[in-house]
Image 1: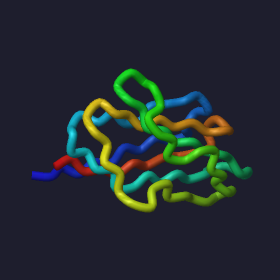
Image 2 (image 1 turned 180 degrees about the vertical axis):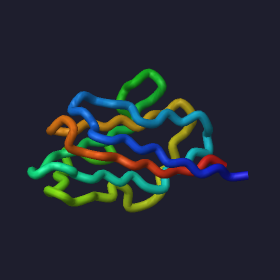
Image 3 (image 1 turned 90 degrees about the vertical axis):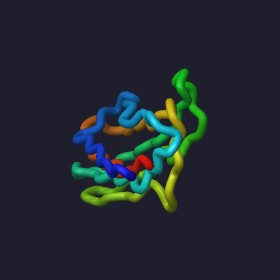
Length: 105
């Protein structure tokens, strides 16, 4: 049976932060929503890491999120195999809220 999850993170720091580590080979990321809660535009970077914390792929590289706006990072679903991680960073500390929605089947 499928289980649905949501991982919220408020005020993402400018230091790289791992928000999700897959524990299943059938983890499907449905949405990565980033919202800018400040009065100036800020950049966000999202990477997929392997189990040794090396970057497998950059999903979004320094994408600008306008003031008081949100951005859907994924245009389609992303399969995140077991042990893989999603890492986030921003150009302005505390400016981005992130919500990751996923399912494990």
